[in-house]
Image (cartoon, rainbow, N blue to C red; front, side, top):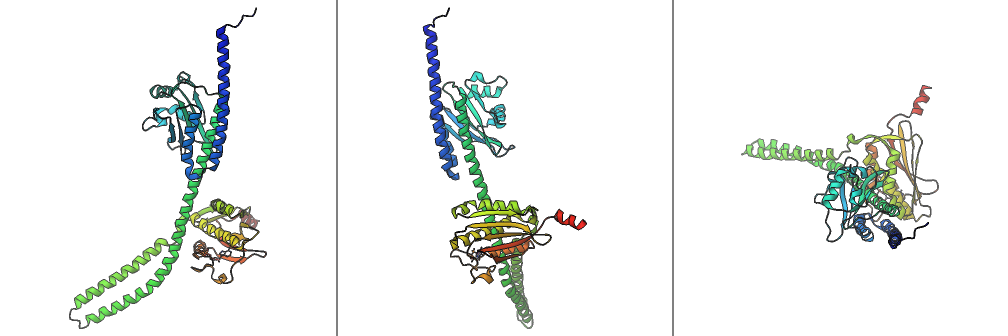
Length: 448
Ligand code: ADP
């Protein structure tokens, strides 16, 4: 015999199915919000990523009727986890003062930072062994929470947490999937912002290196210019001092004045000498480096410029994978100068073929050759013989120092640099560098 459903069970069933319907609607609404988030994160410039994330934390909380949320970041596994973005519903408890998740909820932080998602729908769901989180929840009062790790490049770089204070709430798995997707969008935007910051740092380092090299050249010529007259002053003053001692009424005074002039002159010469040695290319930064990797870095740095100018850049490194001896910052500067010149030549020529090929190939034994081949209009005959001289330029906004600096760096590494016209179109600049170790192929050929 089948028992007839009572009013109460019918009511309960109806409520359950209404609840499921509401959950589905919430998931569907949230899914479309995550779609909007995805479009917003793809558009946002690196400088505005932080502001955008904070505003989206608010949108997510309002959409899911939550009260507080935060994004945490950690620069590397041995660095502290810190809250970088937060949102709190107006009139709700803010984050505890000096909030340090690693102290307050150590166990949970460890678990999330190891890649686990932690959720509780009500405080009694928190496992008893997770004492610190239970204590935290008792003291600070969230009734439901979801903490989701933030992955980037195969490691956890932080986490995002979402909490409700007014009542418990369930986290259906579809909703959690969407929330995880939102956190993933945050992490890729943060990753993009961080790589932009890193690229800017390298660029400014290169600018400093470039300035140092320009200064080196300028100081070299300055000291050459100044040392000659200084030598003359020195010998003239010495003569005057000698004259003054012959029948001068106050020889001691004259002598003192002249001697101090001599001292000043010597000091000036010493200053020039010191400035020169300060800006001399420093040998101590030289180390074995993979030139292919270094070129790859420069190509990455100039990728934005290449795409704006619609230029394709190709790298071809010979299989022997050259390792050279050099100062990586200075050599990046060389490649950067030559690549930018190649871009300028192609832009200037309005060439329909728009490509730059950077090749690394063995030169004579013990040397690698790096060549930058462009499809520009070739070198202007008016400057062809003076390319590497200071202030020689055909560009309206050119300084005419790039090739001079490049040559100075290459020569301080013991190498040579030259330009040659391509047979079809454009120019190839080639420079040589000493390789770090003798290639095995050469060694075995000699043995055999
Ligand atoms: P700048 O780029 O400021 O002019 P550089 O010393 O780097 O200074 O270059 C000097 C000149 O050499 C350029 O103005 C240009 O006329 C010429 N030049 C350099 N690279 C190329 C190239 N790849 N193709 C044609 N001309 C070039």
